[in-house]
Image (cartoon, rainbow, N blue to C red; front, side):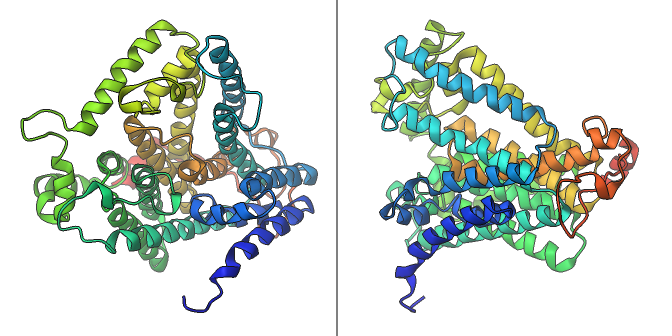
Amino acid sequence: MGTGLGHFIPIVAYMGFWVMCLLSLGGRPILGLYYMVPFIPYRTMRDHLLDYPLGNNMLTILVVAVILGALIKGNRLPKSKLYLVWFLFAGYLYLSMWIGSLMGNEPAPLWLGDANFVMWKDYIVLPLLFVASGLVINDRKSVRNLVILVGIALLLVDRSALAESLSRSWGVFDENKRNSGPLAYGPNQLAAFLAQFAMFFWGFLQFMKRRKVKLACYFLAAFTIVTSLYTFSRGAYIALLFSAFLLAILKDRKLLIVLAVFLFTWQTIVPAAVTERVSMTKDSSGGLDASAQERIDLWTQSRDMFIRSPIVGTGFASFQFGQHTDNLKDTHNWYVKVLVESGIIGGAMVAVMLIQLLTSGLWLFCKAEDPLYRGLGLGFFLAVASCLVANFFGDRWTYVEINGLLWLLAGAVVRTRDSIDPSISQNAALGTPQNHQFPWIRTQEPALPRQPAVTARSWLADSR
């Protein structure tokens, strides 16, 4: 901003991580969680920390500090099968790497420098974020603050990515002009992140009563959708349309008319470069373009690999070590990758995990009475749905930059559900008074209150 202070931002951020680690271990883990939120997707900012000791692992260190601080304080996880599924899946993936090593598909995961071990270690940050959020998100205020911080983080990513895109001329589409934004992994990964969080805030705003809050969410969702257009990711476009269709079915039926009109008129609305990008799915002869054909070839090879080892797969993170079409190291479809590398066993665990995520958000949307919690449930459900669609076009799941914030919100969702659903909340079943539902948590704001479930008839009437 012309102040000359930009040089000091990395060292200030680095020192902030250590301060938050101490505060988290000293009894304020919620502050550590709040601090990490903007840094999770902003990989380019975290890369500036590499010049300092342990800078490459500061996010992981802070997450662990938050978890330890919460446990020292006496906090406990909410009841959710997702924690058990993640624990079993993480353990199975490490075992899977040894299986792949015995098959000769990848090196043994012994050292921190091994590529497969690094991928596994980075992947495990996602369940750690889920655990951290479940431990420290304990009242309505903390849920609200988390949503606000996620919105701020999204706005920072939008601003950086869109400014970089608009600095170029987009009269004609050019693959070389696409940018990775602050996530630093690729335009398709950036697009997946933007699509799912645009849908989160679009769903979240449906239940906001205050005009300023509703307008702020509308602005953020619209700004993010515009930013996603300039990523030129066809997978993200499909994810947005599918999630918007779900939103129309679940909450706003008038949106179906808007979607129908858009599908017939989109070429006159979106930028010319976007139209050109979508039209590139097929070449001039009517066949698939190089990118689409590349995916088909990869999936054919992946099918053959799966058939050779269908139960346990070839080993987690083993695909990158093989020889494939155009020397690509990814299947360009996360579901195919899961089945190839971890087999039917890993695929079954993933299916249970995804079902748990979707049903947790949908349950909160249907059963909660507080508008904040209903918005959280609907927004989370739409974000997960968008993420699942995007993963048909590549691995958008194992990156903490894309899904780290989603798993923080997942922790808030399961904590809120635990406080509302008497079938999984032991304290509610025992008839514990509302203000003592979480006796180990000291806060000035009351813990998440137990709320009566709404009936299907009242929900349908409300949705109209």
